[in-house]
Amino acid sequence: MNIMDFNVKKLAADAGTFLSRAVQFTEEKLGQAEKTELDAHLENLLSKAECTKIWTEKIMKQTEVLLQPNPNARIEEFVYEKLDRKAPSRINNPELLGQYMIDAGTEFGPGTAYGNALIKCGETQKRIGTADRELIQTSALNFLTPLRNFIEGDYKTIAKERKLLQNKRLDLDAAKTRLKKAKAAETRASQLNATRLEGDNIMVNFSHMLSFLHVKWLKSEQELRITQSEFDRQAEITRLLLEGISSTHAHHLRCLNDFVEAQMTYYAQCYQYMLDLQKQLGRCFPSNYHCNNNQTSVAPTSSAASSNVIGSSALTPTSGLVITSSSNLIDLKECSGSRKARVLYDYDAANSSELSLLADEVITVFSVIGMDSDWLMGERGNQKGRVPITYLELLN
Image 1 (tube, rainbow, N blue to C red):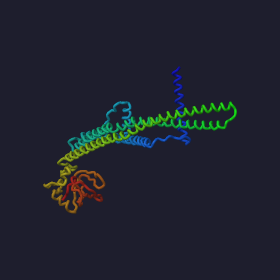
Image 2: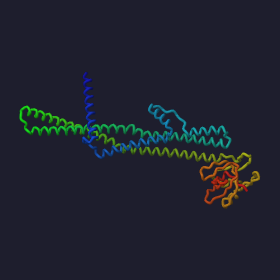
Image 3: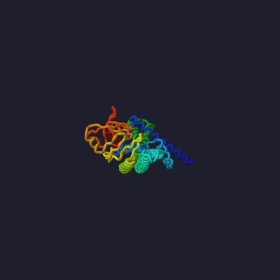
Image 4: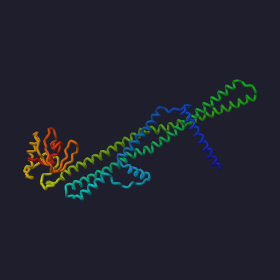
C-alpha cells in the first residue's frame, strides 16, 4: 500500500512538472513569457554538433550507395546486421561478368583467338571483383563503422543531454515566472495594507494573507535557486560533451584517410590488372590469321611494334595483290597521297573520330600531319575517320 502511495505521488509530481514545462513552452512560443538564452559558446557547440550529425549521415549513406549500388542488397545487409548475423556471401557484378566470359571462352574453344581472349578477360574481371570485395570490407571497417558509431552512440548521448538541458531550462524559466508572480502579488497586498482599512477582522485577514504571500515568495526564491543550480550543472555536462566534437572530427579525418588509401589501393590494383590484360591480349592474335575467304595475311601485334607491322620485308602474294613493305609504309606516312588498303579484321570505332571496319573490305587511307604513327585516316564513300594501322593491308 505504501509503495502504491509513493508511485501515485511520484506520478502526480511528474505530471505536474510536465504540465509546468508545457505551459512555459507554450507561453514562450506566444511571446508571453521570458526565455533564458544559452551563452554564445554553448550555442555554437550545439550548432556544430548538429551540423556534424547531418553531414555524417549524408556521407555515410552515400558511401554505402557507392560501395553497394544495389538497394536490395543494402537492405539485406542491414537486416542481418540488426539480427547480429553474418550476411551470406554474394557474387558481385565483376565476378559474375568474369564467370560468363570464362564460360563463353571455354565453349568457343580456348584454342581460338576469341575464346582465349574471353577467358583472359574473365580471369581479370574476377580479380577486379575480388579487389572490389576487399575495398568494401576495408571501407566498412575503417570508415563506415566509425561514422555509424558516432551517429548511434556519441550523438545519441549528446541529444539526450541536450533534451535534458532543455527541460532544465524550462523548469528554471517556470520558477522565474512563479517568483515574479509571487513578488507582484505581495506588492499588491502591501499596497492594500497601506490603506489602513478599519475593522479588526479585515486587518487580521490581511495580516494572514501577507504572511502567506511572503512564505510563497520565499518558497519560490528557494525553488529558483535549486532550478538555477540544476540548469548550470546540466549546461556544464552538455558543454563538456559538445567539446568532444573536435576530437570526433580528428578521428573521422583519420578514418577518411584510411578510406582514401583503400580506394587508392583498389584503383591501382584495377589499373595493374587491366595493364597486364592488355599485354596478354596483344599476344593473343595468331601469327597467321585466316580470313573468311581462306586468304592468308599478317595479323596485328602489340602497339609498340605497330609501325613496322603492315606488310613484311618479303612480298607475299594475296589474290594478285601485294602487301607493301615497311619501307613503303614509311613513304606513305611521309607523303600526302592516298592508298588503297584491305581490312584484315573487324573493328568497332571507339568514338566518333574513328571509322568502323569490316574484314575484307577495301578503303582509302592517307596520312595526316600530327597524327599518331599507329593510325591512318580512312575513307569509305562519305564516311571518314581514324583507323588503326594493324588492321590494314596496304595494296599496290
